[in-house]
Amino acid sequence: MRKFKLTDIITLGIVFIFLSACATPMLEPAEKDTAPMKSTINEIEEFETELETAKQNQLGILSPGWFAKAEASFERAKTKAEKGTALTDIREDITDARGYLKNAEETAKVARTLLPAVIESRRLAIDAGAPQSVEAYGRVEDQFLKLTEAIEKNNINYTKKNAPKVSQAYRDLELMAIKNNTIGEARKVIAQAEAEKAEKYAPQAFELAQRHLQETEDFIDKNRYAATEIQQKADKTVFFGNRARVVTDQGKKLENMKPEETYVWAEDMLKQITAKLAAKDARDQKIDLQIENILNSIGGLQADYKADTTQLTTQLTSTKKNLAETRASYDAQIQSLNQALAAIQSKTIQDQKTKELILAEQKTTARKLEEERRFNQKFIEIQNYFRSSEAEVYKKGNQLIVRLKGMQFPVGQAVIMPENYQLLSKVQRAIGNFEGSSVIIEGHTDSTGSQEVNAILSQQRADAVKDYLVANNTLSANKIRAKGYGSERPLASNATTEGRAANRRIDVLVTPRLQPGE
Image (tube, rainbow, N blue to C red):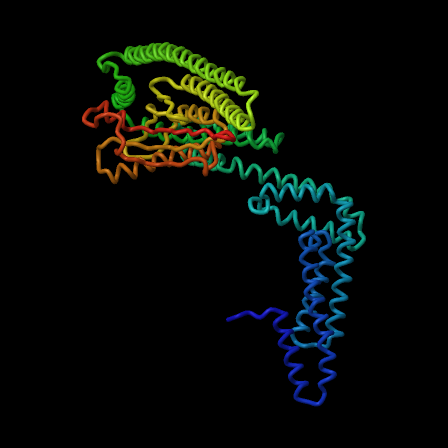
């Protein structure tokens, strides 16, 4: 059913009065009453707008008594207008409402003069989310209203005496809201750890988590507006709280394990590490010898890294040499253009046009040289970011391609694991070298499984990398696209283990923003 507005009801009333007048010889008086009625309608609508503006200016809390009276008088005027009450009664209510609103405005001026600190503390508490996250907010709001009501009653002494207390109460609310919104999760995690008996099974880990929580609370007390540092400390507290829960869970398992089971459990972890390192299975040796075996394997990987670094240095030297040769080639072109320009200096108007074309070509050549020089410099720098086992960096036209060989996902999943964070940080750094660039994340799989499943998985993995980069403020979402190709674009034969490993990859294509004129 359609809801009629006040103006609709009053307009129908006017039409009814007018038609009734037409049915009698008294036409002239009815026509004369129409103008005052319209004027009253306009006055009601104007005051409704004024009332809404006053509410936005906080008159409802800075002068609650007078503002409430203004609203009540206005509502009476609206009700009388809807019932067709005499215009004099309606205008009397409107006049009263205006008077009350004026009193509210005057009181609000006094309140702003007497309570600047309280008003500011209240604003900060609201901005911090106190109305939604702190139960005591309503009680403090009532105390604030008592201050402004005292001003209305000319009890200034009460307002001055209690204003500092209310201001401090709002400051306390603000602090509680900041804590609830930043370390609320940490408190829950530590409470869960306590409920899981972390104090018994993981006393040191639990004590460390509690200490981090207390240190974070102390820091917030002294630095409530240091948002970045607070969040870092809160995240660290959550980490140690979860760690206490993990240690507790493992402690419970170990409590019920026999000595041999405990040894085999630890041995199995060393076995997994050994397998990942492709090292010798040394389970027939003592634990310390098994660990030494693992450390020797790591030493070998470090030696490989050193060799990769040497190889990369050689590649960089070669690239610099090619850059120098390119520069020499462009210099020769520019010199040739300069000579051609000198030869046509004394030509006619047509020759002048030719000169302008040559100048434009000279500028274009110089600009391209400079752009290529910058691109090559960044290319060399970015190559140096990655180890050969992590990524390969290529140039393709004006695009930079970072092939993430070291990007690993759990089998059949698209979850970015913590061990990939360092690699993705390097990718962020590489992208950051090209201001205003756009990026395409390509996901690729081997041919194992169906093409449909591989296409979905590769798209999910590309989306996961995109979401990570967007979440870490690398680029805005509209500057990054993700595309999964499944097994459509293999780099090697899927018939071998090595080939399939090479085909499972993430490619990051960075396209720098073209400069004006390109």
